[in-house]
Length: 411
Image (tube, rainbow, N blue to C red; front, side, top):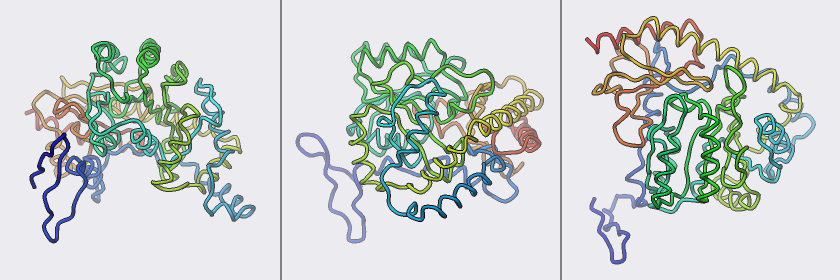
């Protein structure tokens, strides 16, 4: 189909064939996420998956959630009805934010259906079609999909594997006149790179946001999952107007609860509420009540300590296995938070092709770098490994199988 230009910019779609749908202009950019395709491969019977970023099922606080759910339904059947944003959960989130070093009020907390919805709503609020947005050149695919849906124009910057996003590159673009609608970044346990932003860079990013009035979407999905000493505070701790914090219960409690939040200036909450009303009203109000009831038990700190200890153990297992089995000359990150290790193969290799060979020959799966490349084909020779979903012995076996594939590929 050819899209014809019209006077004054824009375009007009030609008349549709009798049985052809008329799509929005942004639809040609939308295709199924590469990670969805990877999930289909990784879900084949017998495949050992180090691919998708799933938490450990056996570590979900299932018994506690079942108990508080039963109690909630017994005392308040109306919890299953439509409901306004649940204020007790907002109050508990304020306490959680304080534990991360962020001072905020319940009026600044906006409840969402997972942090993916938070970023989607904020993108819709801030980004005009065709507007420039700042992204790391290797970045979570969910934000890429949200940008494509609006036809935004990504402007990418590199990421240092030790200290995080390249703040010098951001400053150069801003000083050069670029006026992006927003910057998106993951502060701790970057997906897919595993890196955490240094304290010095966090302070500089906050200062740049203030000076240039640049909204920063700070995705902190992994900030509670650190493996050593407590990390530096989030960006939001250094700038409370231009940094919009995105939090999630998916990685700390359970993904299927579909519950997250944003911390934003209070004046933006009504605008986000209008956008959310158009998308899904007030869902999931029931799980918001369940989560609030769980948090009221005081068990979250103990649960987070359990997750950190077990995920640190699994992180150590995968790093030791990579050291032991992988061919020489390859490089990988050593994360201090999150769920992922990023592996770099020799340039010129295509890990999307290697993935199919790995599934067919060794029944092991990973995520190819192309899924995270916002800046072109620079990550085609890279891959992401998840270490939180599988048991330690499965992690080692998965790395051993993948090492056999890579040894054969490298000749």
